[in-house]
Image (tube, rainbow, N blue to C red):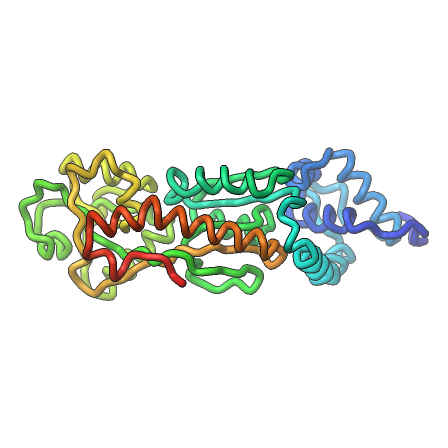
Length: 324
């Protein structure tokens, strides 16, 4: 590698592709995320190294790793690239019709009701925009946002604060107990483990499972782990069949409509607790896009889920609803 810097000027695209490649360690993965060809990525990285007169990557290693100078260069440009993206977002904040690309991730809880309406609405309001939608767990969506693989996510509010993300509380979703409609034990006996009806729970790698487990520990209840699932519908089907009981939320309960005749939802009998669902975005996500998604998500939630549940289950009115 020559140490005589090129006179060719740096390009913003080269810096962006370098930043992605430093994270991904692969030309192919970089090309896929940036939606360009591998040869384009290779050309930009080569031009950047020629301009600087130093090797930024150890090209002999797979996956690609940064050299010491590459690490130093990445540290120095990270803040600058963030500032440029934020400036671009603010400059185009009012031009939704000109938006060209949006990557949105949601947890499964919104997938069947809110997201279809939101997708149709956004495609109408942003006709020139290409959309990418991901459905994943809260942990995965947060990781994708932090890795800049998504622009915006609708997810459980992260248990810890991330300085590189912004969250806007959207929905308060209290935890409730769901029993088979024909269950004979009392609610208190079931929750305290005094009945023969087993506890069916969410898979332990989900944020919702952590929240439930933490609350049960706080109130001194220990329940055996008979069955775990990462699918809310599977849990609801098992409860409806009389195979056990579960702790879930009204939002999740609302997605199991076909099982509702065989289910009964009850307030959590001990100290009440809830989860918060939020819009989580990267700092360079356009404020106009964020406001648009926020307004539509709120109206869809109220119309499709909150309103009908308040009508059918009046005791939810004080605990289940939008957060202003």
